[in-house]
Image 1: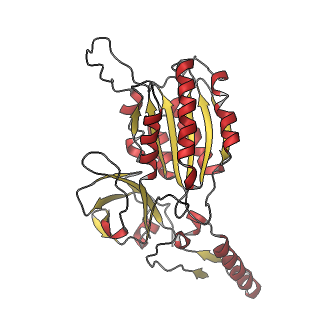
Image 2: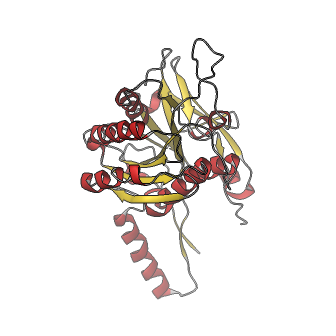
Image 3: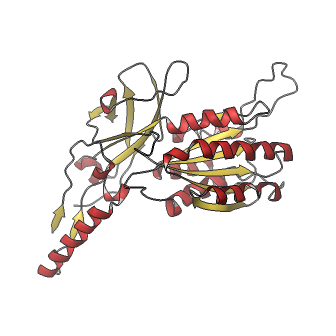
Length: 338
């Protein structure tokens, strides 16, 4: 059996990523060409690309909670089961189309929790949000949910299509249930099936932006299952929550919602944002800053990870006193019998 082994040399270009991550056309052509030659020599020989990078998305904030940009690979340390690992791939998210693109699904609550006036202001804020991310080779999809989850627009980078889907929000209200977890689950599946696997030979950052009051009702998929699927798909979930206020609280502090308590955002590397004011625009500007202040780090699994099928806990640190948030806390590969 032949093996095409891609060296695990550290690189600063996504072209070093495994086929599983980016499916580079040139590398595929090389693999298929080599495969054709091998099969011509012996039909029993099989060509296999025996490389899989394990990737993690991280955001970094300072003591005040502000996103930290401009870090390099040497600013990070990666530990697998408490043993330090070499970083084989590193890439920040930057503007000006010079690095990683974005694939984002908006999942919008139309269950009746939001008033027509709120929906109108939300639509305006979404327009600004999309415009602010125009420099990133961004692709967006739009879904709504109440009792049912609907896809209004699959992935596109055309403003006129997004504008048309935002215009449907007022007509799509459904006040019977709030299937928020089902919506995120469908959004993750949409990212896996329909979003570009690579844009200009670069791995996109995947994210779901969930806009809701934080009180899911009637879901068929459990939060734990959604978190597991999002982790597997390397997708971060961000929520924009319209908080519930208790009449007994004079300080009008938002109550924790079931959505927050589920850990859906924290365990996928995302963050909760709270729409406490009448203007959604500043909130979505902060959300755009958070989503784009991220880094991807990856390493090659060792032989044991490739064969034993065990879960491996991964911890990522910075060499300075920053706060790190990971999109998942470890990985597990399918057991491979040699």
